[in-house]
Length: 278
Image (cartoon, rainbow, N blue to C red; front, top):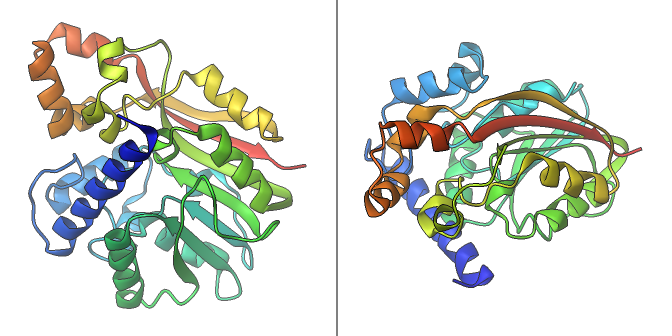
C-alpha cells in the first residue's frame, strides 16, 4: 500500500466514524464507537476529568484519544491554540474556556465528514472562539508564528511523515510557543506483520514509532526543552475492543485475551510530551 492510499484509507475510515457518531449509533468501528458510559470510562482512564467530559457537547467525545494534551500546556486566556487532527472537536472544546473570549482554538482535520460533525458540535455548544479548518497536518494551512500552543491527541502516529508534522508545528508556533502531544509509542518494535498492516495502522498501533525516534523528530524540527510528562500502558481494553485489531489477531492466530496478546500490548505506551520553540 502506498503512502497516499494509506492516507486515503485513514481519511475514509475516520469519515465513516463521523457518520456513525453523528447518527448516534452505538456500533463498533473503532473502540470509540461505544456507549456514552464506555466513552466516559475511557476518557477518565486516559486523563480527562469528569467535568471536562461532561462540558463537551454530545457527540464530541469519540474516545479515539490516548491522553489529555490540553492538561500539559499551561494555556492562558487570550492565547491561540492549534489542535492537529481535531476530530469531532473534543479537545478543542476543552480548550475553549481556557483561552477565553479573546483567545482562539483552531482545529485542523482532513476528513470532511469529521469537520462537519465538529462544526455542528461547536454550534450546538456556542463555542464562538473555536474554528475548524480543513488541512493536512503535514502541510498545515496556517501562516507562520500564529500559535501560542500546538497540541495533538493520538493523531501524529497516523502520519507517514512525522518529521514533517513537527516541522510544521514548529513553523506555526510563535517564539516561546509550546508543543503538547499525546501519542501511542513503542518501547520495543512490534512484529513486522503488525507494523505493515492497515488494520493495525487504523487502530493507531502499527504506525507507532519507538519513543527515542519520535523524540528525535521533535528535536530535529528545532524544539528544545523536550520532556516526557506522562507515560503509561495504552489501555488494553481499547485494543481488545478494536475490530481492526481483533481481525488482525484472528488472521495471526492470536487469542486477544491470551498471554501473547498481553505481551505485545505491553510494548505499546501512551506518552505525553511537551517541548518549546525558543
